[in-house]
Length: 308
Image (cartoon, rainbow, N blue to C red; front, side, top):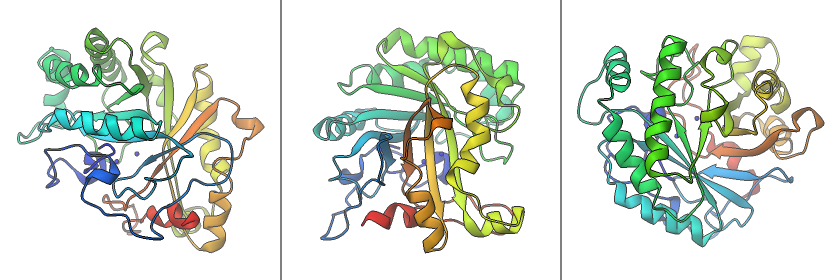
């Protein structure tokens, strides 16, 4: 899916976003909550988390995971301690998406791959994880997500599977050396073919998936809109074969009132088909990468606002 929570979502905003120095939880980015602005988690019992750069879920005690997106270079890592304090004050665990963007320096996909596999970025990852290892909140690291996504947004996506597996495994090894208590999330979109990128049980504690619903896009492409279970279903079935806990690491939905209500009431409802689904994490900001076929930039905040 999106910085912790953060001032930036490099994976959706690209590596030249103007906020490149600090990582902030929602309430610390200068956004003042006003009366009536606080959102609440959807109904249900499946644990719920948020990527929430505007602090809309700041006061919701039902949120148990705070999601942060972090570029691995060009950021003030000391600001992670503020994110840690924000999460601890709210009794939330941290999910930290570490994206191997190179701030201030152009790096091609081939160059990034070569530099990771040769060890040139070991120090970069070690620096990030050294800070993560000193945080007091439970931390799960999600490195180089959506590697199976062919949309061209990520320089680490669609590498030769063996190269991605080697890179992921190397980065987990580096991170574990300085953050031994961290857990690690392998997080494809969930497309067919994702299994080729699975790096192995020894470096994966949990599997993340991306699940977004956009009513108009679905009607145009499929002839009808899809519900949460329809979108998640095939991705979950591919992931569950690895016998790991599953989390929807990025979730969002936009559409008319009926569509929104259908998704909103389904995402946290226990479902026998999804027995290994441990949590869903909402991506509460507008999209910045245009969707295909001229469907523009969905504003995922629309779905999050239903409980306002």
